Image (cartoon, rainbow, N blue to C red):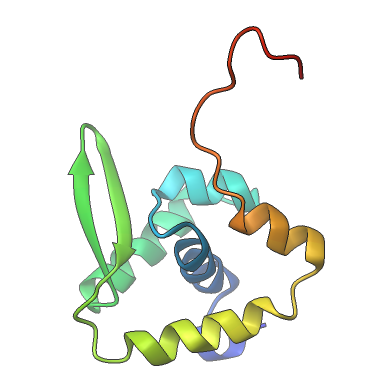
Length: 109
């Protein structure tokens, strides 16, 4: 939906994922959207160098989130939220469901 504005589908994927989940890392985002991790990582680096995102290291993993000091953060988030309206209900539910804990071993699938 925002591909013409942002330049690529992966740029939209990165920003929408971070809007929904608050933070994430490259391989996690690529796995969620079933795309190439290298292109997602390039987008993350591009957004970080532009000041849109900030990152922190957690062990060997680099976590990214929106830069709270980015001057257009409010407007960017509003634009992304409006774009998610056009996603299917299933896509939105899957995107905004943030399950990170592992499943209990005795719990049935």
